[in-house]
Image (spheres, rainbow, N blue to C red):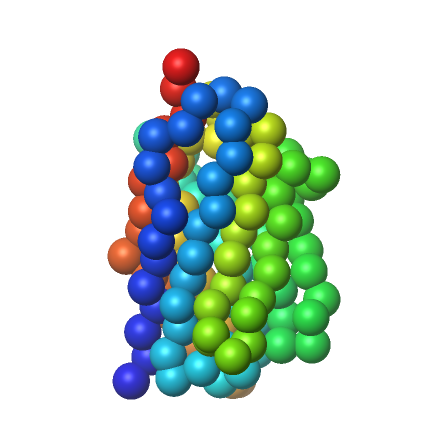
Length: 118
Protein backbone atom coordinates (compact mmCIF):
# COMPACT_ATOMS: atom_id res chain seq x y z
CA UNK A 1 0.00 0.00 0.00
CA UNK A 2 1.34 3.42 -0.95
CA UNK A 3 1.56 5.89 1.88
CA UNK A 4 3.27 9.26 2.24
CA UNK A 5 3.48 10.74 5.72
CA UNK A 6 4.80 14.27 6.18
CA UNK A 7 6.17 15.82 9.32
CA UNK A 8 8.20 18.82 10.42
CA UNK A 9 5.89 21.73 9.68
CA UNK A 10 5.20 24.53 12.08
CA UNK A 11 5.47 28.23 12.76
CA UNK A 12 8.84 29.76 11.90
CA UNK A 13 10.08 33.34 11.87
CA UNK A 14 11.30 35.06 8.71
CA UNK A 15 14.92 34.17 8.11
CA UNK A 16 14.54 30.91 9.99
CA UNK A 17 14.93 27.31 8.90
CA UNK A 18 12.78 24.23 8.91
CA UNK A 19 13.14 20.68 7.66
CA UNK A 20 10.19 18.73 6.32
CA UNK A 21 10.21 14.95 6.15
CA UNK A 22 8.20 12.58 4.00
CA UNK A 23 8.24 8.93 4.97
CA UNK A 24 7.26 6.79 2.01
CA UNK A 25 5.99 3.26 1.73
CA UNK A 26 6.55 0.74 0.35
CA UNK A 27 9.92 2.41 -0.34
CA UNK A 28 11.19 5.51 -2.13
CA UNK A 29 12.51 3.57 -5.13
CA UNK A 30 8.98 2.37 -5.87
CA UNK A 31 8.48 5.87 -7.28
CA UNK A 32 10.12 7.40 -10.34
CA UNK A 33 10.13 10.82 -8.75
CA UNK A 34 9.33 12.38 -5.40
CA UNK A 35 8.91 15.99 -4.51
CA UNK A 36 7.31 18.75 -2.54
CA UNK A 37 4.48 20.99 -3.63
CA UNK A 38 2.97 23.86 -1.75
CA UNK A 39 -0.32 25.71 -1.79
CA UNK A 40 -0.73 29.16 -0.32
CA UNK A 41 -4.17 30.57 0.51
CA UNK A 42 -6.12 31.38 -2.65
CA UNK A 43 -3.26 30.23 -4.88
CA UNK A 44 -2.72 27.18 -7.02
CA UNK A 45 -0.59 24.33 -5.86
CA UNK A 46 2.95 24.68 -7.18
CA UNK A 47 6.02 22.49 -7.42
CA UNK A 48 8.73 23.45 -4.95
CA UNK A 49 11.34 20.76 -5.51
CA UNK A 50 11.64 17.24 -6.84
CA UNK A 51 14.15 14.42 -7.00
CA UNK A 52 14.12 11.52 -9.43
CA UNK A 53 15.01 7.93 -8.62
CA UNK A 54 18.32 8.65 -10.34
CA UNK A 55 19.00 11.58 -8.02
CA UNK A 56 18.33 14.47 -10.38
CA UNK A 57 16.89 17.45 -8.55
CA UNK A 58 14.73 20.31 -9.73
CA UNK A 59 13.70 23.50 -7.93
CA UNK A 60 11.26 26.31 -8.40
CA UNK A 61 13.10 29.56 -9.15
CA UNK A 62 11.66 31.15 -6.03
CA UNK A 63 13.42 28.66 -3.74
CA UNK A 64 16.72 28.05 -5.53
CA UNK A 65 19.63 28.60 -3.21
CA UNK A 66 17.40 28.45 -0.13
CA UNK A 67 15.75 25.03 -0.22
CA UNK A 68 17.38 21.63 -0.65
CA UNK A 69 15.67 18.33 -1.38
CA UNK A 70 17.39 15.13 -0.36
CA UNK A 71 16.64 11.54 0.48
CA UNK A 72 17.71 8.88 2.93
CA UNK A 73 17.24 5.56 1.20
CA UNK A 74 17.54 3.25 4.24
CA UNK A 75 14.89 5.35 5.99
CA UNK A 76 12.69 5.62 2.88
CA UNK A 77 12.42 9.32 3.60
CA UNK A 78 12.67 12.44 1.47
CA UNK A 79 13.52 15.75 3.10
CA UNK A 80 13.06 19.39 2.25
CA UNK A 81 15.51 21.63 4.06
CA UNK A 82 14.21 25.18 3.98
CA UNK A 83 16.52 28.05 4.91
CA UNK A 84 16.12 31.82 4.84
CA UNK A 85 12.37 31.44 4.98
CA UNK A 86 10.23 34.34 3.85
CA UNK A 87 6.62 35.27 4.48
CA UNK A 88 5.94 34.30 0.86
CA UNK A 89 6.88 30.72 1.70
CA UNK A 90 3.82 30.43 3.92
CA UNK A 91 1.76 27.53 2.61
CA UNK A 92 0.61 24.00 3.14
CA UNK A 93 3.39 21.74 1.91
CA UNK A 94 2.54 18.41 0.32
CA UNK A 95 4.75 15.45 -0.36
CA UNK A 96 4.22 14.05 -3.85
CA UNK A 97 5.33 10.83 -5.50
CA UNK A 98 4.97 9.77 -9.11
CA UNK A 99 4.95 6.38 -10.74
CA UNK A 100 5.69 6.99 -14.40
CA UNK A 101 3.33 4.61 -16.15
CA UNK A 102 1.64 5.47 -19.48
CA UNK A 103 -0.71 7.59 -17.41
CA UNK A 104 1.49 8.85 -14.55
CA UNK A 105 0.13 8.03 -11.13
CA UNK A 106 0.43 10.74 -8.49
CA UNK A 107 0.33 10.08 -4.79
CA UNK A 108 -0.02 12.75 -2.12
CA UNK A 109 0.63 13.16 1.55
CA UNK A 110 -1.85 14.82 3.87
CA UNK A 111 0.01 18.14 3.91
CA UNK A 112 1.81 20.03 6.63
CA UNK A 113 1.40 23.72 7.39
CA UNK A 114 4.34 26.10 7.34
CA UNK A 115 3.41 29.59 8.51
CA UNK A 116 6.29 32.06 8.25
CA UNK A 117 5.58 34.99 10.51
CA UNK A 118 7.16 37.19 13.12
